[in-house]
Amino acid sequence: MIRLIIFKEILENLLSLRFVLSLVLVISLFAASGFVFVGKYTDQSADYWRETNKNLAALRERAGALYEVAFYEQTVWRKPKLLSLCAEGFEKTLPNYFRFNVFTADLPGVKGRGNFALSHFSDIDWVFIISAVLSFVALVLTYDSMCGEKEAGTLRLMLANVTPRYKVLLGKYFGAMFTLTIPLMVGLLVSLIIVIPSKDVSIDAAAWLKILTITFLSLLYISIFVFLGMFVSSRTAHPPNAMVLLLVVWVVLVILLPSGGRIFADISSRSPTQVELERRLAEVGAQIWENADKFGKNAGYMSPDPNDPGNNPPARARLKTAQTNTANQVRDDHHSRLLAQALAGRNFTSISPVAIYTQASQVIAGTGINRCSDIYRQIKEYQLVLKEHVRSKDLEDPDSLHLVNPELSTARSWKTISHKAVDFNTVPKFQERDLALDQSLKLVIWDIGLLVLFNLVFFAASFVSFLRYDVR
Image (tube, one colour):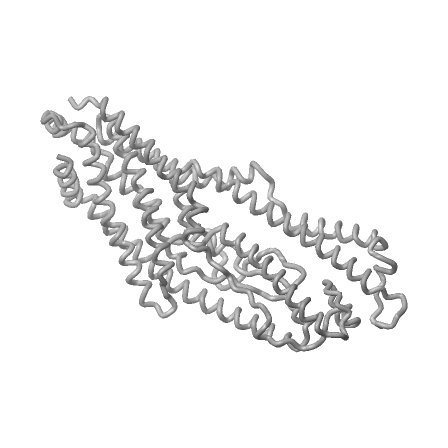
């Protein structure tokens, strides 16, 4: 009996005008998404490789002296993500470059081509189409699944044949899900057909697995709105009433709650400003200099003449190291506060299935806030690796004082760091590492669990409501 109900639902949906219009709309949006992505990804890839090669060329030039390698301020650009096609994650508004040397790192920044006035507009990626459009289509297909058949009298005839109500419910659910899978899969296929022929796009096996995972999350998300539509339909007597009520619920879940994250973040915690950061850096710097003597005699004195008896290289090195480490800690705290505020807003929106689905998809795709914080962490780790390389090479030079400290003037005048050339091929280079699928899944396991929970709650609600539904 379930099979007949499923077939009936699919046939009715496929022959309806609402399905045809929805199919055309969804395919058009996926096609537009593919075309926009190809152009944007090509430009971003060109920018990335140009800046990366420029950075490596400059690092190669510094290999003529070890101390210049240590003090060279590298600029690392965020590599464009292929899977931003699936979940863009506001990539154009997030930091895309990082400046650092062995001893210190600036806060992430935003730079590149593009119109700054367009940064406030969302890109049409897969997640946007599915979360906003297909969720609404799910409600359009299910708002009259119960009350519509009640008005037509077919629901009473169906149940008069001693058909269990749970079979009717499951038949309508699977029929709606199969119908919604058609525009989803056709849209994904159209988008991929547009993207794959591009010479800049190469989808490996790991990327395909992540695409399949995001597709699974999409079906799990759409299922929530199918159950929601069936629940409301079984709680109302007339289809227009059900549609109005569902529209209100859709606006709250899809638009209002996700937008409330920014408001909650601003209310719950004040955003640290650049002025506060500069003032704090000046304060801690002054405190270090006021207590310079605790690092050794004449720690605050520095003469370009290495033979000046007033110079005390070890004390000076300790002073500058303490000053730089303290400043680094202030910057890290500032970065952590910015990140904490953003995460507070994101956590608030987790009461909405849209936000949960979006966040999980971004983690799987490797985009969004998590990726920016992960790159910053990777750069900190790379600094330690490069510093250890400089230290080990410095020990091989008998003319060096072997004081690897963050002061360029003493490194140049006193040779606190070796001036000998190093083999560029042995110098560690920064390479951004992407999370493997299993690592990403560990980060989103709770999000997946919440999507499943939403499904169970709305299924239980629709089941109980339909059991008590008066079909007369």
